[in-house]
Length: 310
Image 1 (cartoon, rainbow, N blue to C red):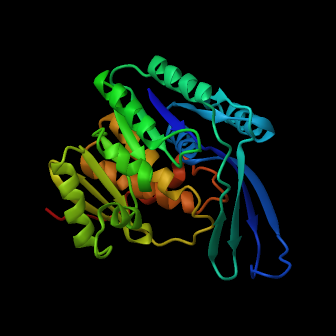
Image 2: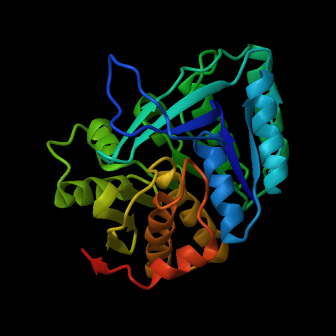
């Protein structure tokens, strides 16, 4: 079983705004609402890939109810801890003329010590040996990076496989827990390790050092350039595919979902890399944070070029 943990989920409102500009009146030509947050997005893509997951984390208020109802309608299992505050709503603005994507993300409500303890208890109850638990996205006030890293260590000690798709301080804290997977993007890895640039050679060397340090799988997403896949067998570079993007929201989450699906299915390294790029590519052709369908993913999978860097 795959369990996705989104401690700071969101209701994503996506607007299409031609010629979007600051300090003036903008008129939207399209609008949609999607359940969001990185782990929730991963659960949606896992469903599209044909496997199940349990989404958990914190939900509160009317926005939290909307997310729960949307997941029910999608047939996605969920078991969230309810909080007193209101789950945040994030605004995603796509300008189809300039082809720009603007995210305005709320910070999210603080969570209580009681809610934190309840989520810890839920995780330790849900996760069984050989399950995969993904920690994804930002951390709300009231929950520290060290607490989440402690959860990861406790799960690993129980034989649970831990994956991490976070950045900044949460990712830095997680490194000490030695998760099985981390999936930073190029800029996040540069910030994490103080790299001089985001050239592929620089990122590949950094990924190699993390694998040597005890992280079994390091995947670095590169946007349009593709992604790097590092493990003890070496490093693969999967080139990105050029498509007409509709929404980049959740593209990295789609890649993460493909990684976890591939791990669950024991897919070979090259097949994993091709599936990951194909899934992320298919995602950007879909509106808002809606997931791609499997036919779209298969359409791109065989077009992905893989190079062995070492």
